[in-house]
Every structure is written in structure tokens, then in C-alpha cells.
Length: 191
Image 1 (cartoon, rainbow, N blue to C red):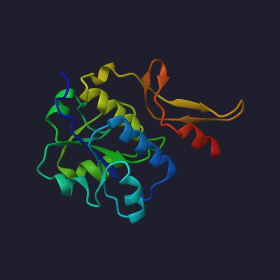
Image 2: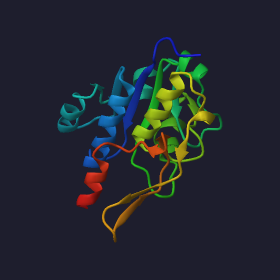
Image 3: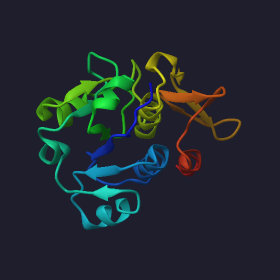
Image 4: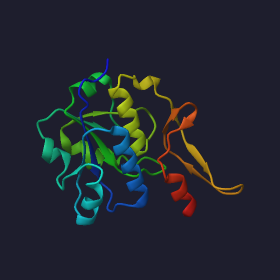
């Protein structure tokens, strides 16, 4: 089963600023989705200008814009996994525009799903990057069951023989390689 019409992807911009890391993930998410994408909760003119190059932008949140519509919030604390059938019936799929912490804080539930009234679904037991979540959602809309999507538990970025960065998030894996945000390795090497 493949979704006939891909639903709208909404990214709720919940971070106080648009950092370079966050923008890298947003750019990759928009490229992966290759369909209608809407950034909500965008309150500054500068951020709006930047995000308009990737998709539509609104200052309201998804709940205000899509109340009464068939929407699904991708929340790691949800009890049910996302399925292709869910995607086929959804008007919109909502991802939190949140950079994760090593230990999940439950911010998607606090900031988005608890007050939305929308259905919630998870993408497995691991906290994913924003673009990683979009990759998984896209695969599910194309008919791949969540259980068949390989996710690395964490990724180590080697900078040189002495220095490395461990990203403690789940990353989808294709042909034994994690799908890492383009530009992220270079960004981390500058830190």
C-alpha cells in the first residue's frame, strides 16, 4: 500500500532561534519530503524570510490552523506507531521543530500534542533528528512498515584521530550508512 496523495508536512518551529544546526535539519527535511511543507510558529521576520525558501510559513501553530482536520503529531511518547494507513487518511503530519537533548525531555508532548487534540503516533523507541523523522515518515507514506526501517541507535562523527562527536539520536540507515544531515559533519567540526 502506497499513499495516493502525500499529506502536508508541518514542522512546528518550537526553538527560540533558528540556529545553523536547526536550519541544516530543516533544509534536509524539506528536500526529503519533496512535497507541501509548512513551517508554523514562526514569529520573526528574519526566520520567516529564511524558511520561505523551503516552504510555506505561518506564525500560528498547527492547532490553530488545522483544528477539525485529520492531523497526526509525531510524538515519541505516543502509544501507537505511525502506519501507511495513518498517512493515507491524514490531512497533515506534524513534526516538532525541536533539537533533542541526550535524554529526551518530552517537549513534543508538552509543546504540541498535549494541547492539540490531534492523533499522536511514534516512530519507534529512539529519539530521531527532525530530518531523520521526516525520512522515516516519507518511507512509511511510500508503503514501508516502520518495523522494516533500520535505525542506528547513535552515530559517532570522527573529526580527527583524537576528537569525535557522538550524536545520541536515532538515524535511519541506508546501505549500512546512517542518513546524516548534509553539512552537519562540517558544522560539528567547526565547534
